Length: 237
Image (cartoon, rainbow, N blue to C red):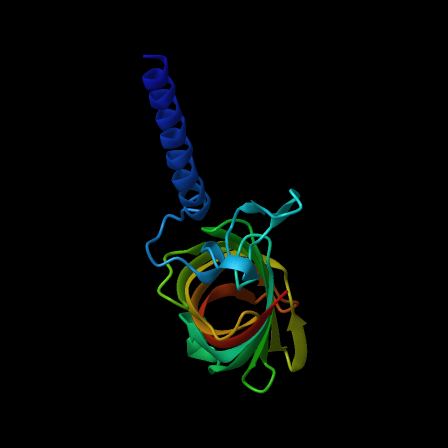
């Protein structure tokens, strides 16, 4: 009887150890679940190269962050240069022509889903009769992950400085107020390598309007709307 009890105890202990041994690697491999089925490479386990989003304990027993750097991953810094067409709308389109614009862009990855987005842009129209500078800040929302393709949406607020060159009683007058406004639009990025990405964005801008009275008493309407369609190339560090 003692031998049988001892054998049963030994078999039970070995069974528990075997189950724990199988469960441990499974829990490590699945500790970094993401909300999307097609998750980016930096959220997946990649063995020794370190692609998981969680801390993995090495042979030395010291926890290390095994996340691989990738565009728009949490904690990443993403800088890009945008260039493309600026389409004027409403009253602006009646008086000025569309032209090329550019924008310097910075995005900080806050989480898998969100990023802090800021940009500095400029465009000039009708041989300098209208120029627009902008300093914007907003929230980037990553909509999904399709292999290396990342569709997203950006929305936020910012400051606009349209500069008008107008003729008032035979004199050239410059009007350049600082206006508050909003912007919103979709975009898509393609991860070319671990640190490089390309993409495009379509953004609607609304500069909250105001009025300026010239020396002659003429009232000028300031502000308006426009849309930018820009291509960009970026680098992640």
